[in-house]
Each structure stands twice: as structure tokens, then as C-alpha cells.
Amino acid sequence: MSAGLFAGKELLSADRETTTTLPETVSPPVTTLDVGDLPFTWDADVKVFNLVAEPVQQVIVPGKTLDLWGFNGSAPGPTIQANEGDRVRIAFTNHLPEPTAIHWHGLELPIEMDGVPGIGQKLVMPGEQFRYEFSLHQNGTFFYHSHMAMQEMVGMLGGFIIHPKRPYVPRVDKDYLIALQEYAVLPNSSIPNSMNMEFNWLTFNGKSGPASTPVVVRQNERIRIRFINLGMDHHPIHLHGFTFWETGREGARQQESAWTRGNTVLVGVAQAKDIEFVADRVGDWMLHCHLPHHMMNQMSSTVGPMTRSVGAGMQAGASMEEAMGMLGDGNATSENYAPSLGRGLGVGSTTDTSVTNSPLSIRDANGQLPLFPQDAFMEGPMMAVDKQVQKPETYGLPPGWSGFEGGMMTLVRVVSPSQYDKILELKRLQGGGAGR
Ligand SMILES: [Cu+2]
Image (spheres, protein in one colour):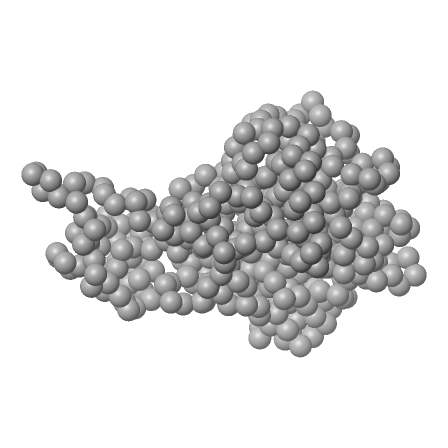
């Protein structure tokens, strides 16, 4: 038993910024910004977690709340942290309106604990409970999720960190988990369409930029960031300013001889990837998925009468089938649909009005100037919401910064010791712990 390492409340409320003072033999706890950890209690030498699957209202950015299914109040659910050698009990309760079961992704455990309904266990019906209990002999970055595919697509994911018996070498000063998720939500709706293949809300730990809390570290600290991905897309996560080592992936930490260097790590569906670097240069460095459509919020076709001064564009208030590009008549390769297959949000490229027909379009002597607008009115100071996303971790960012963030995007803020102390002070004044 290793009660001393992460005993109860300490892990939840402790000022995580003091982890550099931990003894050499102790791994720093993992911080899941904007989400937090699942609390636990002890029953003799068993670590007991209470996990509840339930509908949640997840604020993706200020003003945009999605109806999702998650765990204990959030999607993704709170992170489970345990130690190699622990025995854990997860008392699971299903508060969803339909059956489910929870899979422990990557864990080597008895088949009846694997969380696959119809194979290793019965479905956990609405209102029912199920007791998962197993011993942990692995260490690394894992996760838990519903084993029902559509439930996965509406938020049911959470991190499961198993700390090693001895800290990994070299030891890091700070350790973070970022869960990648994606949703397809019509404008003016709060409910994702789990069948859609184009996603317009992309989140780090349940927040889209600029609402994601920046990672704030002291200059010269060694940092680990663990990514987990459960969605329909693989996400190439890119870090500005540093060349990192990829030190681990789902299942295990890699031998040092197998580490690879890079500035972009492809986090495939169902994968975990760990990266490490020494944050030796001060700056507010971008960390983001580099798929262009994953770097913006509420991406949708230009719709409505405002944009239909010429031709027949897609109407606002179109049906779900039309607006989300689902096939209504004809097959996928029919004349109607073939040209728009792939990435259409609307009826398709066949009927969407070109954005150059918008009132914002520019014309020159030869007619319309192709392509404009692309980003001119979609990001920048006009779109800034600095005040709405202000928190201690954003202290000192240049005015208007928030207008340049969207989707799976946040900042790794490498700050001087004095700036760091200032941000810590602001956190203390705010009275909240880090990680929320
Ligand atoms: Cu992406």
C-alpha cells in the first residue's frame, strides 16, 4: 500500500505548483486542467473511487454549453490516479437513460472486469451499479470509457494514470493530461450529432480555445504532457518553440533508446502519447491540433439570407439531414452527393453558395476576388473574448489574445520566476486550487 504518495484530499486540493518540492522518490501528480481528479477513499488497502455516468452540461467556451454524457459532472470525466501495485475498486453507477459498461483501456485485468457488455459482464442498466475491482501491475497513461460506441462520441471518456513504483528518469517537475474530444453541433443547438463525420467543436479537456486553461510553467522546468484521444479523428498535436521527446504511448513508457524527437505528435484514435521537454525559453507557446478545421470554433458553412445575395445558398433552419450533410436521397456516389463527399457540413459544394457572394466580398475590375474572406472576419481582435476567459493563468497575455485561439488549442506559458509567483498569488487570491 502506498497511501503516502497521493493520499486522499491532498492530491485534490494541494497547490500543485509546489510539486517540485516533492521527494525524489515520488512522481509528481498529474494535473488535468479544467477537469480535475476523481476523489477516492480507502477500504483497508483498497483504493475506492465512485464513478457516476450521467448527462452533463459542459461549458465548451463561454456562451456555448453542450449537452453531453460524461462522468461525475464533466466530459471528459475526472482523472483517476493510482500507483503501480495498488488495488482499486471503482464503484460505478449508471445514471444514464440507457445501459452502459465501462472499459479500462489498456489495463491488463480479469475478463470480467474488462467492461465489455455481452462478453465479460452484463450491461449495467439505468439506475444500476457495478463494482469493478482489480490490481494494477502496469504504469503509464491509460483511460476509461464507455464501451458503447455512440456513448464514446458524446463525451464518455476519462484519464486513468498509473504512477510507476519509481519515478521515470529524468524526473519531470510538472505532469499534465490533455484529453482530446470532438463534437458535431449545429448552430443554435447544444446536442452533438454522434453520426456526423465533420466536427465543429474540438476540445482539450472539455474546453475549446480560448477557454482552455493555459499550461503555466516556470522557466527551465522539465514538463510532461500526456495526450489521450477518443473520437473519429487522429490529431497531430503541435507544440511551438520546443523539440520534445516522445517518451511514452498507450500501454507503457518507452525505453529511452526508442524515444523520438519532434514538434508534432500524432495522437491516433484510442491512443495515448506522452511527450517531455525542458521549458527553457520564456514565451507563450502555442499547443494545438494542426488540422486546420480543428483550430477554430463552430465551423459551419456560410448560411442564411445574409450570405445569399446571389444564387441559392443553404437556408438557415435547414433540416438536420441538409445541414449536417447526411444523405437524404440518392446514394453516396450519386450526382447529388458525389461532389460533396468527404468534408461537407452543408448540403454540399454543389449547392452551397460561394462565400464570395457574401456582402463582405471584394470585387475588382475582373469581378469577384476569389477566396476572400477566409480568416479575415473569423479570428482576430474582433473575436476576442479576453474578459470572458480571464483567469490567473491568462495574466499578462497581450490584449486581444483570445481572438486568435479556437478548437484544440491552448498555450504553454513558460514564464520567469517573478511572473510565475505573480500568477500563483492571483490563484491564491482567487481562492481556488489549480486545475479547475
Ligand atoms: Cu485535430
